[in-house]
Length: 65
Figure: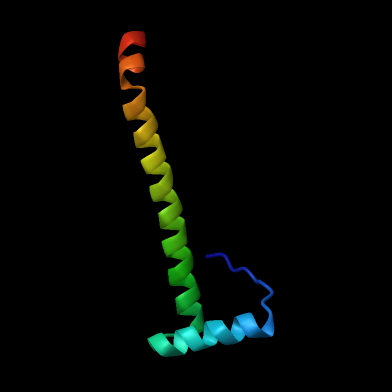
């Protein structure tokens, strides 16, 4: 497993801690879950874009085959 270090302003860190406290979880858990969600969202966006392009060009691909 890899680790990273990031610099946050005091206000950013305080907001992060407050959000974690509201949800009753550790700050690290909140960050890991948020990053995982963001990465999955990016993957979903790519899949949606690829599906759109494939559907839009389906007739062209059929002719070229």
